[in-house]
Length: 333
Image 1 (cartoon, one colour):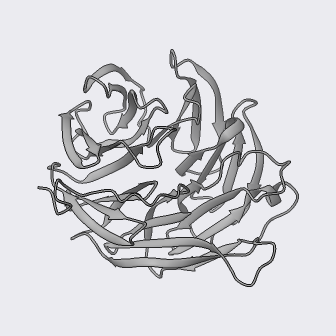
Image 2: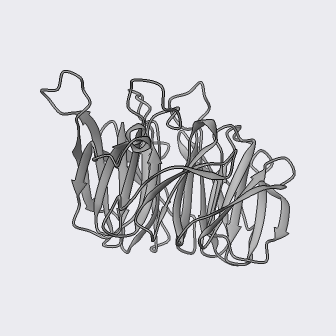
């Protein structure tokens, strides 16, 4: 399992999650550094990871690509003309490497890439203003975007065009499909709305104490959120109630959450259910959220980057196959 974090100071941070030896039960973990260096010319705004591939986007209008298995940079993409605001990989269930990379920017544009090699397939502009976030459906056939124009858009990734567009009345900062693709979530300040994916009908609304800055869906209808309340909250989106909460998980606002293992919403198995979180104070932590049902858990692993973290992504898929940056594995422009 790997974690990748972007920072305000232009640094990209890569970590490998490993058992801390000696540890017979392998329940004590450590975040071993893979790499850290200033990969962008300005602040990093977003990161994504899937299998051995990772990517970061920044205010320098570029996307940087990484091979986690080799702990190295493999090139960059220069197809955006504005700050890259969101990144998402699509990985089919039967493959351990991503098939596509979808990116969005502050100009309202979305780019669709083939991920092996990284080749631009289509550019479209579903929003008139900046895209705040995007989420790819588990089928890989469509994506949702929300923008600064207070609108929600659906993109047909097969045909490379916008297929649906509606005004929300308020600006949404986050949009996420659930793990099965039957529902999606939108965050507006401290509120999260749960919708049916088929017709966008509202199922329920979740009221957080403070502004939500990051979210990650898990199995069994569980949604993890973090933000200005410095806590990690697990919502049961089926009932619309809080399942459990890790109070004061960080000393500053939570800027990223990653579900590292499947079935992280369950509480019956003996294996740990790992969730990673990152704060703007530069601290990355990994939790066994199963313990949060009974009491406030201690983090299983921790890394202190001493930088202002802006985003977090993770990959739990192992693969010996290496992704490529371009036709020859070098930088693509």
